[in-house]
Amino acid sequence: CLARRLAKKDNDILILDNLSYSSNTENISNVLKKRNCYLKKIDISDFKKVLKCIKSFKPDIIFNLAAESHVDRSIDKNYPFIKSNILGTHSILEATRLYFESLKKQKKNKFRFIHISTDEVYGDLEKSKIKFRENTRYDPSSPYSASKASSDHLVRSWGRTYNLPYIITNCSNNFGPHQFPEKFIPHIILCILNNKKIPIYGNGKQIRDWIFVEDHVEILVKLMKKKLNNDTFNIGGNNEVANIDI
Image: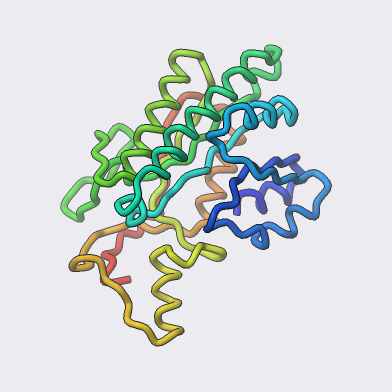
């Protein structure tokens, strides 16, 4: 969705993706037809390949959206989440640091690393609680959320230690077109279409905030254009609903 939005403005775009089970290049087929958009099949935990791509492409902005993000999968098999979300973030941060340090002052002033995270680093949301704020204490409750919390800490420490300019966004649950079918809303829709029972986790009373993916991307693009560094922004739809009500 972000690639499609950026491509409309004739930005030069390089997409790094390991093209795992949940990837589908058909979603960005029109983007890849443009002369200024490229796709490289790379695992972001492969430091040497990431560094080579960054130095060759010479970006002004890096968005780190790469992550394993399915909570149930993280419980069943947690290492892929550690590898992608922690080691992968370390790899791309180190590659970015070396690239950033090689830039001249004018280009350094334009550069930013934008790290897309999740509101699940704050723990579970309850209606009786005050809404999450940017200074809410981290309280992750799954291997997935713990790995994303770790990646946030890495980004902040690279900002403080190496003066790498960054923005961290913690967004609530996204929904919209092209979402992989294992995710909550498309999974429910497919169950209905195929006359299957809708699976409910626990009592279904877990509360989630939902935001349409296009709205999320619009905010990311606005943040990209603003002169903001070393800050954190929570992104949500102000749309809290229990899973059972969905």
